Length: 198
Image (tube, rainbow, N blue to C red; front, side, top):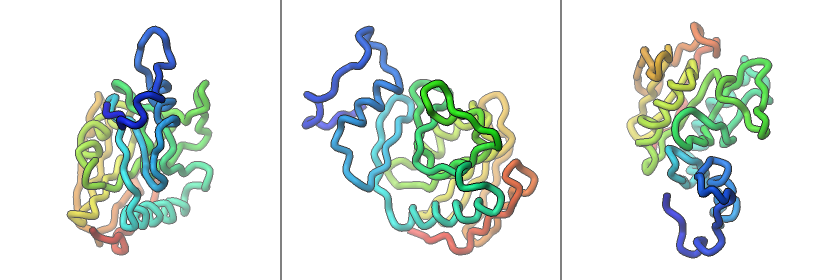
């Protein structure tokens, strides 16, 4: 984990046993001077801060608006902490669609067991997370649909059929090709023709 030097004197362990937990790490984040417009999340025990970009936001908004055809607003989330299987995985996914009847855990967080769809829009400095450890955590959590949208390559990558910690179906196409989710819990076709490129 990287801690900004100017914050080191203000970060304390919340648990005297010294055990590092997601709650402890998120308490640290609350004490850190995270710049406005930055997304923060914890992947495999590492804290990542990523600036929000216009292209990134435009794609997120486009996906959100299309999902509203089948999901009520309260079942769609963006940049909201959800803890996933694996060591210290507290993600703030770009877009999440929750199942009907989704509930919060004892700490007030949405449960990964209720996630039906996740979309991550690639940022240059954290792309490895979306293609690697986060994909693996979503598969381990058996998230039925995981979509990666890459504005740098103008491609999307759809992962479905999670079982035994892996996705067993993957499809990739360029922007402009529709993403057919009619055979999934999402039940619609996402249009990609207006996704901007970086």
